[in-house]
Amino acid sequence: MRDPRAVYGRLFVLGLAWTVLAYLVLPMAVVVPVSLTDQYYLSLPQETVSLEHYRAVFERDIWLSAALDSVIVAVCATTLAVILGTLCAIGCWRLASRASEAVRIFMLTPIIVPVIVQALAMYKFWIDLGLLDTYLGAVIAHTLIAVPYVVITVSASLANFDPRVEQAARNLGASTPQTVRLVILPSITPGILSGALFAFTISFDEIVVMLFITSRNVYTLPKRIWNGIQDHLDPSIAAIATMLIVLTFVLLMVELRTRRARTVRLSGTNE
Image 1: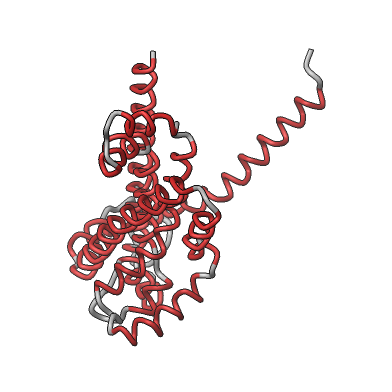
Image 2: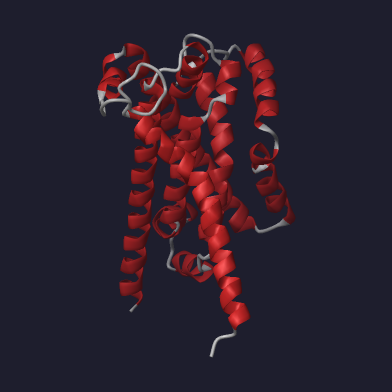
């Protein structure tokens, strides 16, 4: 017979967890009906459900150009962050020394330092380098912000990687580049994909740094939404937010299914 205290304790923990989850998720759910409003300001539908504001998003150039800028910056930053973060994580894992631990801690600095401090530092530094309000400056800034997340996810995958597999490849005559490309990278692909997903999401959603280092030439979607909130509470903002929520959910499901399929395939191979 189960201990009643253990049962009640488990129910309390589950109830607390679901309460916190609801507190975080339910505010996002409010955005969906607001995006279907038939009014020209942020409100719930009054007389009927309307898709007018979704159509406005695809018809107005300001939203399309801002989305294109966000995609360009996010894709470039994600590519660089995945390459740099993966190489850094593999190097730190391969060396396994105090110096590598110091490098790993240094790479995590962007997560520790407040974003506003990073934005101020980048603003001053980007002025000196002539990168202010340029795509290159935005990509570099987002790369620096996203690299730590790639390092974390790839390092977590490397923690479960058996070093004897690498030693076997080297004993069979594989060079270091071949070992990394044919042995290590395929084994840590889930961590790399997770890091890429985090990097893309963070870059696409970043607003604070972009407010400091861009003005007119680079106008990402979060910045356009911010300015839209300041000028006029357009329901198109709610429509965009709903589409971003759906896109994030779809990407997360794809990443989870890819990881699950890879786990099943590896389990079948081991058997």
